[in-house]
Length: 434
Image (cartoon, rainbow, N blue to C red):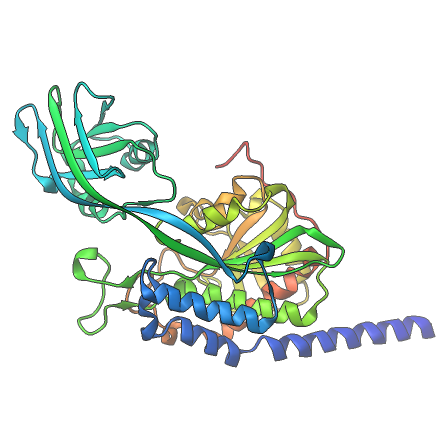
């Protein structure tokens, strides 16, 4: 009986010490400090390809260095650099069946300085008719490797402004051209003349590593994206007030980036991880998840045990405080593991309540998830009623910092058995991606 009593006493003492440790290391004061810096006006909305994104990167790098993390694969610093190709149209002339098409009816995607095509060229004419699934058809042609002249029914004219503001940016663009022409139903004879300025531009993720003790070749990833929309203007279609055009992105996703930094500090202080932990903040999520896609190619997917992608955790979920949801909950048993580790606490993880939004494949976890990794996004964003999403009002004053702090603690506690090697989540079934 005495041995049982002593064991129970020691266990209780360890839990108390752990509780005191996590409250000391993950606290609202430190969360506020990091969040305030990342979402400040002088960060200018952290848009990719601006000096502001470099400033944000430098801050995160300094936090990783201060935490005592190592660089990724022996890199000289915490910047994981890659290049993207940007194309800007300088001139165009499209003539279809003898009639020159108004430029406002055309959306062109090409990464060649000069394009000259006719009906005799290697280009396929296709149609998007009234009643078709525009998004599906657009993605099919936009992501294809062939050249297309796409004739779009005039019933879709309302989406033209959205398509015209898509950034012409790719990591490895092909030499094909995809041209969407709205309000034209036939194209028997045509000529397409385009002139573009094509440039290669650098971007970087920020990546820090905490090597594992007994399982260094097994990886657990904590990630978020640190870019946002930048400084807006009315024609870009994102609402803002007359006095504020900076899209601070406090919740989207300075909140997630803050969490990654906090977890890096906490887990480095614990220094008891058996598996290697990779902490990363991705760039260019708002442009199409390019940072995450590049990062995912640098690791063997079968060695990635789990990925915790943190996206918009600064507001209360639909269930209120001390709660968050996990996208793709049913696609692995990772959510069950996290819930089990939180048993007895006030915190609860829930399955994604917005399945119609297909969030599992819309955030930075998607690339690795499609390779079978139990890579899930943790969020609290109310997708049906988040008033400040992609507006200039997404500022630190709109966040619940205390609740956000509790979410970060819950992630730290619930991930402990995965980090220690005790639990290994099941893989995502890649034969059923939807």
